[in-house]
Amino acid sequence: MNSIVPASAIERRWPEGAVDEIVRLVDVHRRFGETPALDGISLTARRGEILGIIGRSGAGKSTLIRCLNGLERCDSGEILIEGRKISGLSERELQPLRRRIGMIFQHFNLLSAKTVEENVALPLKIAGVARTERLDRAGELLDLVGLADKAMAYPSSLSGGQKQRIGIARALAAGPALLLSDEATSALDPETTRSILALLKDINRKLGLTILLITHEMEVVRGIADRVAVIDAGRIVEEGPVWSVFAEPQSAVTTSLLSGIRPQLPDHMARRLSQTGGTEAIFSVDLAGPAAQGSLLSDLSAALPHSFRLVHGGIDHIQNQPVARFFIAVPTRDAELPARVQQFLTARSARVEGFGYDTDHA
Ligand code: ADP
Image 1 (tube, rainbow, N blue to C red):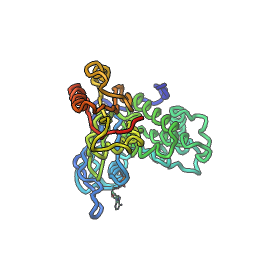
Image 2 (cartoon, rainbow, N blue to C red; image 1 turned 90 degrees about the vertical axis):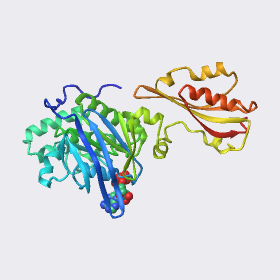
Image 3 (cartoon, helix red, strand yellow; image 1 turned 120 degrees about the vertical axis):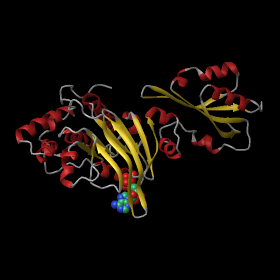
Image 4 (spheres, helix red, strand yellow; image 1 turned 135 degrees about the horizontal axis):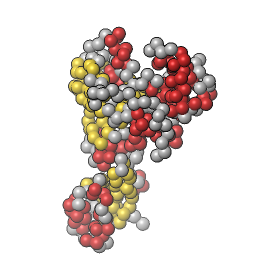
Protein backbone atom coordinates (compact mmCIF):
# COMPACT_ATOMS: atom_id res chain seq x y z
CA MET A 1 0.00 0.00 0.00
CA ASN A 2 1.45 3.38 -0.96
CA SER A 3 1.99 5.89 1.77
CA ILE A 4 -0.62 8.62 1.66
CA VAL A 5 0.18 10.65 4.75
CA PRO A 6 3.32 12.77 4.75
CA ALA A 7 5.22 11.82 7.92
CA SER A 8 5.64 15.41 9.00
CA ALA A 9 2.01 16.39 8.48
CA ILE A 10 0.98 16.05 12.08
CA GLU A 11 3.15 15.46 15.07
CA ARG A 12 2.55 12.49 17.30
CA ARG A 13 0.95 13.73 20.45
CA TRP A 14 1.93 11.22 23.04
CA PRO A 15 3.49 12.82 26.08
CA GLU A 16 5.99 10.85 28.15
CA GLY A 17 4.22 8.43 30.47
CA ALA A 18 0.95 8.52 28.48
CA VAL A 19 -1.22 5.49 29.15
CA ASP A 20 -1.10 2.59 26.75
CA GLU A 21 -4.76 1.64 27.08
CA ILE A 22 -6.71 4.21 25.12
CA VAL A 23 -10.10 2.58 25.69
CA ARG A 24 -11.15 0.26 28.46
CA LEU A 25 -14.64 -1.00 29.10
CA VAL A 26 -15.33 -3.13 32.13
CA ASP A 27 -18.60 -5.03 32.37
CA VAL A 28 -20.65 -2.25 30.79
CA HIS A 29 -24.45 -2.62 30.91
CA ARG A 30 -27.12 -0.50 29.27
CA ARG A 31 -30.73 -1.57 29.15
CA PHE A 32 -33.74 -0.05 27.38
CA GLY A 33 -36.81 -1.40 29.13
CA GLU A 34 -36.57 -5.16 28.69
CA THR A 35 -33.83 -4.91 26.02
CA PRO A 36 -30.26 -5.30 27.25
CA ALA A 37 -28.54 -3.21 24.51
CA LEU A 38 -25.17 -3.73 26.24
CA ASP A 39 -25.07 -6.79 28.43
CA GLY A 40 -21.69 -6.85 30.17
CA ILE A 41 -19.21 -5.55 27.58
CA SER A 42 -15.52 -5.68 28.51
CA LEU A 43 -13.05 -4.46 25.89
CA THR A 44 -9.66 -2.85 25.61
CA ALA A 45 -8.04 -0.95 22.74
CA ARG A 46 -4.33 -0.22 23.09
CA ARG A 47 -2.54 2.77 21.66
CA GLY A 48 -1.88 2.46 17.95
CA GLU A 49 -4.26 -0.44 17.50
CA ILE A 50 -7.10 -0.72 14.99
CA LEU A 51 -9.88 -2.63 16.70
CA GLY A 52 -12.84 -3.72 14.60
CA ILE A 53 -16.17 -4.05 16.40
CA ILE A 54 -18.58 -5.91 14.20
CA GLY A 55 -22.16 -6.96 14.67
CA ARG A 56 -25.45 -7.25 12.89
CA SER A 57 -28.13 -4.60 13.10
CA GLY A 58 -29.47 -4.36 16.66
CA ALA A 59 -26.34 -5.92 18.19
CA GLY A 60 -25.60 -2.86 20.35
CA LYS A 61 -22.98 -1.00 18.27
CA SER A 62 -24.64 2.43 18.33
CA THR A 63 -25.32 2.18 22.04
CA LEU A 64 -21.66 1.30 22.56
CA ILE A 65 -20.55 4.36 20.56
CA ARG A 66 -22.93 6.66 22.42
CA CYS A 67 -21.67 5.35 25.77
CA LEU A 68 -18.05 5.78 24.64
CA ASN A 69 -18.44 9.40 23.61
CA GLY A 70 -20.53 10.21 26.64
CA LEU A 71 -23.78 10.93 24.77
CA GLU A 72 -25.41 8.13 26.70
CA ARG A 73 -24.84 6.90 30.24
CA CYS A 74 -24.32 3.24 30.94
CA ASP A 75 -26.32 1.69 33.78
CA SER A 76 -23.32 -0.02 35.34
CA GLY A 77 -19.70 -0.86 34.61
CA GLU A 78 -16.77 1.41 33.84
CA ILE A 79 -15.61 3.22 30.72
CA LEU A 80 -12.11 4.69 30.69
CA ILE A 81 -10.59 6.84 27.94
CA GLU A 82 -6.82 7.19 28.28
CA GLY A 83 -7.11 5.85 31.81
CA ARG A 84 -9.74 8.39 32.88
CA LYS A 85 -13.18 7.22 33.91
CA ILE A 86 -15.97 8.84 31.96
CA SER A 87 -18.79 7.10 33.77
CA GLY A 88 -20.11 9.43 36.45
CA LEU A 89 -18.69 12.67 34.98
CA SER A 90 -20.87 15.75 34.57
CA GLU A 91 -21.54 17.15 31.10
CA ARG A 92 -18.99 19.91 31.78
CA GLU A 93 -16.33 17.45 32.95
CA LEU A 94 -16.95 15.34 29.84
CA GLN A 95 -16.15 18.14 27.37
CA PRO A 96 -12.32 17.91 27.44
CA LEU A 97 -12.49 14.09 27.30
CA ARG A 98 -14.79 14.25 24.26
CA ARG A 99 -12.13 16.25 22.47
CA ARG A 100 -9.84 13.23 22.83
CA ILE A 101 -12.25 11.32 20.56
CA GLY A 102 -12.63 12.14 16.87
CA MET A 103 -15.60 10.65 15.02
CA ILE A 104 -16.41 9.84 11.43
CA PHE A 105 -19.88 8.85 10.28
CA GLN A 106 -21.65 6.93 7.53
CA HIS A 107 -23.28 10.11 6.17
CA PHE A 108 -20.25 12.34 6.83
CA ASN A 109 -22.25 14.94 8.84
CA LEU A 110 -20.60 17.94 7.14
CA LEU A 111 -22.19 21.38 7.40
CA SER A 112 -23.46 22.22 3.93
CA ALA A 113 -23.43 26.01 4.44
CA LYS A 114 -19.75 26.01 5.42
CA THR A 115 -16.71 25.60 3.20
CA VAL A 116 -14.54 22.50 3.44
CA GLU A 117 -11.91 24.51 5.31
CA GLU A 118 -14.48 25.81 7.82
CA ASN A 119 -15.85 22.31 8.34
CA VAL A 120 -12.40 20.96 9.13
CA ALA A 121 -11.59 23.88 11.43
CA LEU A 122 -14.90 23.65 13.32
CA PRO A 123 -13.70 21.51 16.27
CA LEU A 124 -10.87 24.03 16.77
CA LYS A 125 -13.31 26.94 16.69
CA ILE A 126 -15.34 25.20 19.38
CA ALA A 127 -12.14 24.67 21.38
CA GLY A 128 -11.45 28.42 21.17
CA VAL A 129 -8.43 28.27 18.84
CA ALA A 130 -7.68 31.58 17.05
CA ARG A 131 -8.81 31.88 13.42
CA THR A 132 -5.39 32.03 11.75
CA GLU A 133 -4.12 29.11 13.74
CA ARG A 134 -7.17 26.98 13.07
CA LEU A 135 -7.15 27.72 9.34
CA ASP A 136 -3.44 26.85 9.19
CA ARG A 137 -4.19 23.59 10.89
CA ALA A 138 -7.15 22.92 8.57
CA GLY A 139 -4.76 23.46 5.65
CA GLU A 140 -2.33 20.87 7.05
CA LEU A 141 -5.14 18.41 7.57
CA LEU A 142 -6.52 18.90 4.07
CA ASP A 143 -3.04 18.21 2.79
CA LEU A 144 -2.97 15.09 4.92
CA VAL A 145 -6.15 13.72 3.33
CA GLY A 146 -5.12 14.79 -0.19
CA LEU A 147 -7.70 17.56 -0.66
CA ALA A 148 -5.73 20.77 -0.21
CA ASP A 149 -7.25 22.14 -3.41
CA LYS A 150 -10.82 21.86 -2.05
CA ALA A 151 -10.41 24.24 0.91
CA MET A 152 -12.86 26.80 -0.46
CA ALA A 153 -15.31 24.29 -1.96
CA TYR A 154 -18.67 23.44 -0.40
CA PRO A 155 -19.52 19.86 0.59
CA SER A 156 -22.27 19.58 -2.04
CA SER A 157 -19.65 19.76 -4.82
CA LEU A 158 -17.71 16.76 -3.47
CA SER A 159 -17.98 13.02 -4.09
CA GLY A 160 -18.78 10.64 -1.22
CA GLY A 161 -15.14 9.62 -0.88
CA GLN A 162 -14.02 13.27 -0.80
CA LYS A 163 -16.66 14.06 1.83
CA GLN A 164 -15.37 11.25 4.00
CA ARG A 165 -11.80 12.53 3.62
CA ILE A 166 -13.04 15.89 4.88
CA GLY A 167 -14.80 14.06 7.72
CA ILE A 168 -11.49 12.39 8.62
CA ALA A 169 -9.60 15.71 8.50
CA ARG A 170 -12.23 17.28 10.78
CA ALA A 171 -12.09 14.31 13.18
CA LEU A 172 -8.32 14.78 13.49
CA ALA A 173 -8.44 18.55 13.96
CA ALA A 174 -8.34 18.56 17.75
CA GLY A 175 -5.54 15.95 17.85
CA PRO A 176 -7.61 13.11 19.31
CA ALA A 177 -6.21 10.00 20.99
CA LEU A 178 -8.98 7.88 19.51
CA LEU A 179 -10.77 7.85 16.18
CA LEU A 180 -14.24 6.31 16.32
CA SER A 181 -15.40 5.23 12.89
CA ASP A 182 -19.15 4.61 12.82
CA GLU A 183 -19.94 2.67 9.60
CA ALA A 184 -17.77 5.27 7.84
CA THR A 185 -17.55 3.37 4.56
CA SER A 186 -21.07 1.89 4.48
CA ALA A 187 -22.35 4.53 2.02
CA LEU A 188 -19.34 4.23 -0.32
CA ASP A 189 -18.67 2.03 -3.34
CA PRO A 190 -16.05 -0.75 -2.97
CA GLU A 191 -13.22 1.17 -4.64
CA THR A 192 -13.80 4.32 -2.58
CA THR A 193 -14.12 2.15 0.53
CA ARG A 194 -10.68 0.70 -0.17
CA SER A 195 -9.14 4.14 -0.59
CA ILE A 196 -10.70 5.43 2.65
CA LEU A 197 -9.54 2.32 4.53
CA ALA A 198 -6.04 2.80 3.09
CA LEU A 199 -6.06 6.40 4.31
CA LEU A 200 -7.17 5.31 7.80
CA LYS A 201 -4.45 2.67 7.93
CA ASP A 202 -1.84 5.16 6.85
CA ILE A 203 -2.95 7.69 9.48
CA ASN A 204 -2.90 4.91 12.07
CA ARG A 205 0.67 3.98 11.16
CA LYS A 206 2.06 7.47 10.81
CA LEU A 207 0.37 9.03 13.83
CA GLY A 208 0.09 5.97 16.05
CA LEU A 209 -3.63 6.79 16.29
CA THR A 210 -5.94 4.24 17.87
CA ILE A 211 -8.98 3.50 15.72
CA LEU A 212 -12.23 1.80 16.68
CA LEU A 213 -13.90 0.62 13.50
CA ILE A 214 -17.58 0.00 14.11
CA THR A 215 -19.14 -1.84 11.21
CA HIS A 216 -21.45 -4.60 10.06
CA GLU A 217 -19.09 -5.48 7.18
CA MET A 218 -16.34 -8.08 7.61
CA GLU A 219 -14.65 -6.73 4.48
CA VAL A 220 -13.89 -3.51 6.37
CA VAL A 221 -12.46 -5.41 9.34
CA ARG A 222 -10.45 -7.60 7.00
CA GLY A 223 -9.05 -4.54 5.23
CA ILE A 224 -7.29 -2.82 8.10
CA ALA A 225 -8.13 -4.06 11.61
CA ASP A 226 -5.54 -5.72 13.84
CA ARG A 227 -8.07 -7.27 16.18
CA VAL A 228 -11.78 -7.83 15.97
CA ALA A 229 -14.50 -8.15 18.57
CA VAL A 230 -17.82 -9.59 17.46
CA ILE A 231 -20.84 -8.18 19.29
CA ASP A 232 -24.23 -9.86 19.39
CA ALA A 233 -27.22 -9.10 21.61
CA GLY A 234 -25.09 -6.72 23.67
CA ARG A 235 -22.29 -9.21 24.35
CA ILE A 236 -18.84 -9.80 22.92
CA VAL A 237 -19.20 -13.32 21.53
CA GLU A 238 -15.74 -13.59 20.05
CA GLU A 239 -12.52 -11.59 20.02
CA GLY A 240 -9.03 -12.06 18.60
CA PRO A 241 -6.52 -11.21 15.86
CA VAL A 242 -8.39 -10.75 12.59
CA TRP A 243 -6.66 -13.60 10.77
CA SER A 244 -7.39 -16.11 13.49
CA VAL A 245 -11.06 -15.13 13.81
CA PHE A 246 -11.37 -15.42 10.01
CA ALA A 247 -9.66 -18.78 10.05
CA GLU A 248 -11.52 -20.28 12.99
CA PRO A 249 -14.76 -18.48 13.76
CA GLN A 250 -16.08 -19.78 17.07
CA SER A 251 -19.62 -18.46 17.00
CA ALA A 252 -22.51 -18.85 14.58
CA VAL A 253 -22.81 -15.04 14.35
CA THR A 254 -19.19 -14.71 13.21
CA THR A 255 -19.61 -17.52 10.69
CA SER A 256 -22.67 -15.79 9.30
CA LEU A 257 -20.91 -12.38 9.13
CA LEU A 258 -18.05 -14.09 7.28
CA SER A 259 -20.26 -15.90 4.80
CA GLY A 260 -19.95 -13.18 2.15
CA ILE A 261 -16.17 -13.21 2.05
CA ARG A 262 -15.09 -16.77 2.88
CA PRO A 263 -15.34 -19.38 0.15
CA GLN A 264 -18.69 -21.18 0.45
CA LEU A 265 -19.79 -24.32 -1.32
CA PRO A 266 -21.33 -23.01 -4.58
CA ASP A 267 -25.14 -22.98 -4.43
CA HIS A 268 -25.63 -25.36 -7.34
CA MET A 269 -23.46 -27.94 -5.57
CA ALA A 270 -24.98 -27.38 -2.14
CA ARG A 271 -28.49 -27.85 -3.60
CA ARG A 272 -27.83 -31.31 -4.93
CA LEU A 273 -26.11 -32.70 -1.80
CA SER A 274 -27.69 -35.69 -0.15
CA GLN A 275 -27.20 -36.57 3.51
CA THR A 276 -27.77 -40.28 3.01
CA GLY A 277 -25.24 -41.28 0.38
CA GLY A 278 -23.71 -40.67 -3.04
CA THR A 279 -20.64 -41.28 -5.15
CA GLU A 280 -18.55 -38.59 -3.44
CA ALA A 281 -18.36 -37.19 0.09
CA ILE A 282 -17.94 -33.40 0.16
CA PHE A 283 -15.70 -31.86 2.84
CA SER A 284 -14.56 -28.36 3.69
CA VAL A 285 -10.92 -28.09 4.80
CA ASP A 286 -9.83 -25.03 6.80
CA LEU A 287 -6.21 -24.21 7.55
CA ALA A 288 -4.44 -21.11 8.80
CA GLY A 289 -1.02 -19.83 9.79
CA PRO A 290 1.94 -22.23 9.55
CA ALA A 291 -0.34 -25.19 8.75
CA ALA A 292 -1.52 -23.41 5.59
CA GLN A 293 2.04 -22.79 4.43
CA GLY A 294 2.78 -26.46 3.87
CA SER A 295 1.80 -28.68 0.99
CA LEU A 296 -1.13 -30.43 2.58
CA LEU A 297 -3.09 -31.34 -0.53
CA SER A 298 -0.09 -32.67 -2.43
CA ASP A 299 0.92 -34.67 0.66
CA LEU A 300 -2.60 -36.09 0.80
CA SER A 301 -2.37 -36.96 -2.85
CA ALA A 302 0.95 -38.74 -2.29
CA ALA A 303 -0.26 -40.62 0.81
CA LEU A 304 -3.66 -41.59 -0.63
CA PRO A 305 -3.50 -41.44 -4.44
CA HIS A 306 -6.74 -40.50 -6.24
CA SER A 307 -8.40 -39.85 -2.92
CA PHE A 308 -9.94 -36.45 -3.67
CA ARG A 309 -10.99 -33.87 -6.22
CA LEU A 310 -10.53 -30.19 -5.42
CA VAL A 311 -13.91 -28.60 -6.15
CA HIS A 312 -13.72 -25.06 -4.78
CA GLY A 313 -11.83 -22.60 -2.53
CA GLY A 314 -8.43 -21.00 -2.24
CA ILE A 315 -5.86 -19.24 -0.06
CA ASP A 316 -6.32 -15.74 1.27
CA HIS A 317 -3.74 -13.66 3.15
CA ILE A 318 -4.90 -11.69 6.16
CA GLN A 319 -2.38 -9.72 8.24
CA ASN A 320 0.31 -11.56 6.24
CA GLN A 321 -0.98 -14.93 7.44
CA PRO A 322 -2.26 -17.50 4.97
CA VAL A 323 -5.86 -18.51 5.60
CA ALA A 324 -7.00 -21.36 3.37
CA ARG A 325 -10.42 -22.87 2.77
CA PHE A 326 -10.93 -25.68 0.30
CA PHE A 327 -13.80 -27.94 -0.63
CA ILE A 328 -12.88 -31.45 -1.72
CA ALA A 329 -14.88 -34.36 -3.07
CA VAL A 330 -13.77 -37.83 -1.90
CA PRO A 331 -14.95 -40.91 -3.82
CA THR A 332 -17.02 -43.32 -1.77
CA ARG A 333 -16.37 -46.44 -3.88
CA ASP A 334 -13.94 -47.42 -1.10
CA ALA A 335 -16.22 -46.94 1.92
CA GLU A 336 -13.21 -46.35 4.19
CA LEU A 337 -11.67 -43.57 2.08
CA PRO A 338 -13.62 -40.52 3.38
CA ALA A 339 -12.72 -41.40 6.97
CA ARG A 340 -9.05 -41.96 6.05
CA VAL A 341 -8.86 -38.62 4.21
CA GLN A 342 -10.49 -36.90 7.13
CA GLN A 343 -8.04 -38.51 9.55
CA PHE A 344 -5.04 -37.52 7.44
CA LEU A 345 -6.13 -33.88 7.23
CA THR A 346 -7.08 -33.57 10.89
CA ALA A 347 -3.69 -34.96 11.92
CA ARG A 348 -2.15 -32.09 9.94
CA SER A 349 -4.08 -29.43 11.90
CA ALA A 350 -6.78 -28.89 9.30
CA ARG A 351 -10.39 -28.45 10.39
CA VAL A 352 -12.52 -30.75 8.33
CA GLU A 353 -16.29 -30.68 8.07
CA GLY A 354 -18.51 -33.04 6.10
CA PHE A 355 -21.25 -31.38 4.04
CA GLY A 356 -22.97 -34.44 2.60
CA TYR A 357 -22.76 -36.56 -0.54
CA ASP A 358 -22.84 -35.67 -4.19
CA THR A 359 -24.25 -37.99 -6.77
CA ASP A 360 -23.94 -36.01 -9.95
CA HIS A 361 -20.82 -34.04 -10.65
CA ALA A 362 -20.74 -34.52 -14.41
P1 ADP B 1 -26.84 -1.52 16.40
O1 ADP B 1 -26.21 -0.15 16.38
O2 ADP B 1 -25.83 -2.62 16.47
O3 ADP B 1 -27.82 -1.70 15.29
P2 ADP B 1 -28.25 -0.50 18.75
O4 ADP B 1 -27.23 -0.14 19.77
O5 ADP B 1 -28.87 0.60 17.96
O6 ADP B 1 -27.65 -1.64 17.77
O7 ADP B 1 -29.44 -1.28 19.47
C1 ADP B 1 -29.24 -2.36 20.37
C2 ADP B 1 -30.60 -2.75 20.95
O8 ADP B 1 -31.07 -1.73 21.80
C3 ADP B 1 -31.68 -2.94 19.90
O9 ADP B 1 -32.51 -4.00 20.30
C4 ADP B 1 -32.40 -1.62 19.90
O10 ADP B 1 -33.75 -1.79 19.49
C5 ADP B 1 -32.31 -1.21 21.34
N1 ADP B 1 -32.26 0.25 21.51
C6 ADP B 1 -31.25 1.05 21.15
N2 ADP B 1 -31.50 2.34 21.46
C7 ADP B 1 -32.74 2.36 22.06
C8 ADP B 1 -33.57 3.39 22.61
N3 ADP B 1 -33.17 4.65 22.63
N4 ADP B 1 -34.75 3.00 23.10
C9 ADP B 1 -35.14 1.70 23.10
N5 ADP B 1 -34.42 0.70 22.60
C10 ADP B 1 -33.22 1.01 22.09
